[in-house]
Length: 451
Image (cartoon, rainbow, N blue to C red; front, side, top):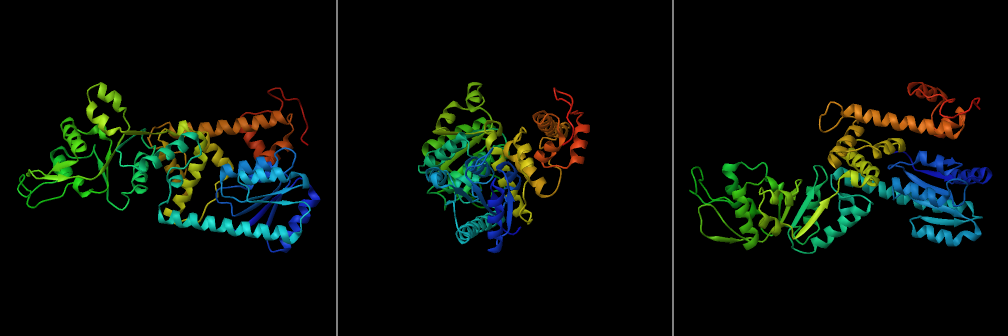
């Protein structure tokens, strides 16, 4: 991990230089920036440090900068520097997530001490993240099912409400949206958390052994049954049974499952002795079970028993604003799994990721994060379609072309402010313009010398 740094943002050159010198004399590493826009180039999910920003600046002010920073990582401490008349604004900033604020004029010792405390806090946050990533697990719903979109906030609210009851639940969602993650979370935050969580893949059960697998059997119940055996339902007593992709369950077994859910009693094969069953059933399906029931492929009465509560897992296309946060978390988890050092994800990579479609949803995004951590090409796709790489490459290239073209237009064809704004070298800008067929004199741009 890189050493901690104070990112100092102020448009007043003299004040910025003197403050940076004071922090440097206090033993703190400093990176200064004259604007919020340039400061964002240093912000990543793994940013190790604190941001100290003037609250009033031309262009992007301190409040806006703080909001943009917290879109990348909500735990980065931001200290806002205010004038004498900005106290009310600073108080509002504290409510919106600022770590602290300091009034001008301030002493060197005061700001150095405040920054040092913020760095200590940031250090703890990063260490805790590494520990959780190395353990391969998270400890709350926000970590398991991250996202600030309204649809994810509502989903977590429903999960917590359902977990406080013993109601059975049906979880609907496309492939890769995290149906099993939600089911496991529902179990882990319920009163049944210390009891078994038994996941049953309804599509993978061998037809000849389905009843034995689920209900268990007595010795001699069928050829080869040499001793009594618990079934999965009985093994889960006191806990939760996950019926994954229940739409794949054979029709005859659906009728028997209906009786189990109604009566909470099972019979082992070869026995007439009822066994009480204390479990919660959670079923998942990528198919629309209402449509399946209407078509006669799924029992309507079983559907009514299962969907006491229905949760719908949103596809990533329904919560695009969550993609950057989710990708950064998946990268963090991947570094733990693969025993890699904490990695910084450049903001431009995050921006590109956010603009892509992810038909495989979280599962596909996780694979992209794994490839990023392993240093491999993120352009391969889960579905193996031959045009997958081309689709991603074309979209990234199209986005890059549009950004450069817009900057050229904004600066009237003058190249110097363009490559400075984009943070690339003059040579790189020339190469990209040539690659994308861009001319500074096209698209309504007047002739302008490089300046």
